[in-house]
Length: 361
Image (cartoon, rainbow, N blue to C red; front, side):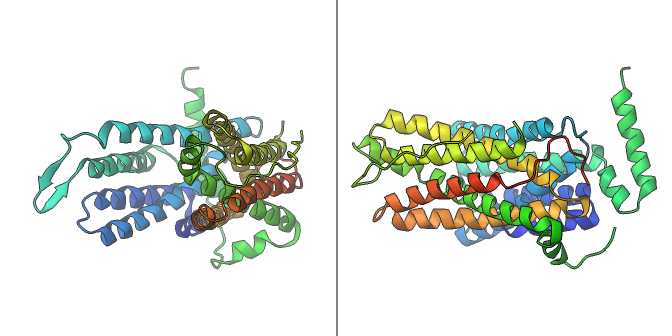
């Protein structure tokens, strides 16, 4: 939440590559230091700083990546990039399964009791550090950013490198809050408000509900509905590709799946619906990644994505708090609230302009 907009703003002012290297380094270094923190408060502080670095890599990498892609392939390539987020989640889960239960990783490091979970934290920091090194050594700055910033000679050198690789084998200074004002002025205002609502709705629903799925599963396993006193309501009807329509349909299906999770009676049914919810939610995230990069000009792109990422973090916190407060007393309220928010996000997504195969501005 803190790092998203800050890094996005810096990326629009100083360049995508430099900000990516620094944010990845912050994430990796402070994540590694957290593994040897002797006190819990210090561990939280170091993880907080590491998280600031994470906030930079998410919005900036999509801006950076999109500016190298031709408009005909941009949607597919950004979606392909987004799949590595899920691949990383799976890899992290498998790594935790392999490392954390192991007793051989438990030893004393001076006065520090170095347990297996600390090794897991170190290993999770390695990709950020290696990525920072590779970006610093191998990756060029975005040529589109360089052109917009008036650095034509550097842009030409990057274009030459790109050309050689492809043929191988055959700005202005803005105050920090000016980009936000620009996002909500004139022609960008309607799309910015729409994306604000969509990011809030999907983040509240996805992160809020996902964190509490184990609790809901346990209740279903004990017998009955995840929420007491279930009353069957009329099912929501889903509407029926371009990125905007993909986002809208995914959010609508997510809403329906969450509503059905509320009324199911068996663990198997709940598991199936949770998989549907996860799958279509990821489709919505991927579509938003594509649309978000195409709706804003170069000088605002990373700032906008960083801003909406921050909004999503706030919504995720609120979703978790809402579930934590109400899951035992009024379980139906947060579940149906998530369903309603996802439905709202899906309908609002229909208001976004189509961006299929349009040139980046």
